[in-house]
Length: 366
Image (tube, rainbow, N blue to C red; front, side, top):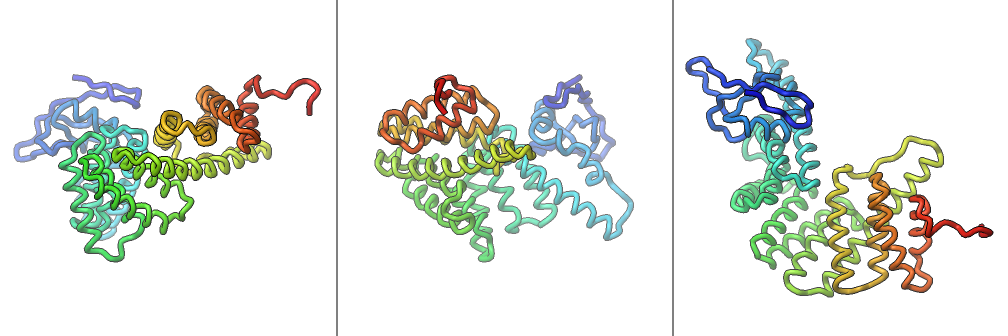
C-alpha cells in the first residue's frame, strides 16, 4: 500500500508491520495499537493510513528525522546522553509550538492538532506532569479543539490550565492573558456571555500589562469582546470597540509600510511583518468583519475609509496587489465623502504605488 504525503512531493510506502512478540506499538495520534510504521524515521507508528497522513501534514514532515535520536534505544546510561535527549525534546517543543500557532492563525484547526498534541507530550517528558510549563501546549490544544467544536475537551484542558495558574503565583502575564482569552472564547461558544466578558476584561488587562495599551495583541481582546456585545445587541459599544481596534491596526500597519518603503528607497533588505505572515489570514478576517459591521450598521464613512485602508496596507505588504487595490479603492471612495479628510493623501499614495490610473498626477501638475 502506498500513501501520498502532502507537501513532501514524495510517495512513501506505508507497510503493515509484524512486530516481534511482546512489542506493542501505539498510534502517534490516537494511542491505539499500531500496525503501520513511518518508513522514513522508522520510530513513529500509526493505527491506519489516515492518521499517518494527518500527522505528516500536521507536524511529522517537519520533525521526522529529529525523532530518530530521541526514540532510538541506546545502551548508554550516561548523564550527558540524557541531557542531550532533553535538549532535543526542548527543540521539538519550540518547533511544534510554532507550527501549531501558524496553522491556528490560518484557521487550520484539524492540521494544528498533531503539532499541539506532540507539543504537550514532549512538554510532559521534559517538565513532568502538572507543571506550569505545560500551560502553553494545553492552550494550543484547547484552541485547536475549540475550532473543531470539541467544547467538552476544551473545558477539561482549560480547567487543568486554570488550576496550574492558581497554584503558581509566579505565572507570567502572557500566560494569564492567553488563558483568560481562551476561557472567554469558550464561554462565548457556550452562551455564557457575562462570564465571557469577565474573562476578556482580564485578558485585556494582563495583555496591556505585558505588551502595552497600543499593542495589536490587546486590541484583539477588544475585538473578541465586541463579538459578545453583538450577541447582546449592544451596537454602540461594538462601534466604540471596533473603532479602537481599527485605530490600533492603522497605526501599526502605517509604521510597517513606512519602514518597508524606506528600505526599498535605501535598497536595503526588505523588512517583514513584525508578526508571522500566516497571521495575515487572521488579521484579514478581523478587519473584514469590522468593515462589514461599519458598512451595515453605522455607515460611518470615516471608519470605512480607515478600515479599508488598513486592509489595503495589509495586502500590499502581503504582496497581493489585487486585494490591496480593491480595498484601496473602497477607502478612497469613502474618504472622498468627507471634506478635508486626512486619510485621502496616504490612500492616494498607496494606490499610486499599486499603479491605479485614477490616482496618477494630471499632466502639467507637480
